Amino acid sequence: MNHRPIFFVLAVILALSLSCLSCLPVACAAGSAGAADSVDDIQVTVTIPDRKEGVFAPDKLVAGGSVEGVRIVFENSGTDVATVAATIAVPDLLSVSVPTQELSERISAHDNTVAVEIGEIASGESVTVRIRVKPPDSIPMKTNEEFLVSVTAADGSGTEYKHRVTIIPPPSWITYGTIIVSLVLVAIVLFAVSRFGILEMFTTIDLVTIALLAALAGVVFRWFWQTFNDLLGPFGGLIFTIPVSALLVIALHLVRKPGTATLLFLVDQMVCMVIWGSNITVWLGWYLLEGAVVDAEVALFGGNYADTRVASVIYGMSRGFISYWLFYFLFSPAAWKICYADWYAWLQVGLAVLGGLIGGSIGYDAARKMRSAMM
Image (cartoon, rainbow, N blue to C red):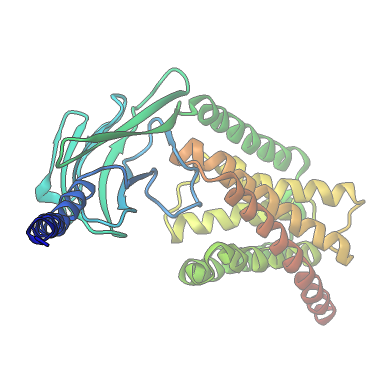
């Protein structure tokens, strides 16, 4: 039997099999190169303002505010190396600048467009690009704008990512209204002092007591708070609210005159202006408000000058609420053009109330002991 045809067929099959096997590594390499140059696995994250995460309201800018940072992160979630470039189109309402960073030599900016040669991003790695934007001095109404981030791979494929931000008009009417109300409050206090002779009711000992307590609040405890505030993070406000509430209750219990709380915080702010250089000209009336509210509560409770623990706690809590609510919801957007995240602002207000509760209770115990020692 002639076996040559059979051997010939087997030889052809073997040759074809070997040729296919030899092509497999090449096909895999080609497929890998294609995946490496794709942008499908590039995740883009834009963070504005580039501040403490969660503390400030995300994606909100206040017109008339200062320069804010923008952080753009390009992350490769695929399994292969990606070689990409990006173009960042910034809204026309914002002026753009590029700070010095690791990729500075690969970043170019023209008008409101920033081009970045990112290069290779390994699997699971990320590259961060930072730019700075400045809101306009004024806009007629709230407007929504978009950052457009275009990512391009080496093979020419690309994708776009849109990130929306809100630009809020400067609260000029709040600012001007605050100045007017502030001056009105100061005028009311001065009128009450001159009309009813409130200041003449305070003895020299009363004034010395108020001055010493105000100095403790404005110098000692404020320094302590500024020095150790960061150690407790968001709970740092308790370092200041607890002792100030305690001093408030002590002043009420020892002096026992109408207007004691208002006078205490007036002297406190004057001390702060001298020691720390605080500008209180515009906001003086609002700073007096936390004392005026407590004095009104004293009158409402029938002249209860922290004579009970419940009243002391209420005074401390109300003072904490008023002062911190004014700071986060009025002073910040109106004076410093900063919007805090709602949850963070209310957390700080809540902690101030808690500090007032603790400080009011401590102040009550201390005031009773001090008054008994004086008597």
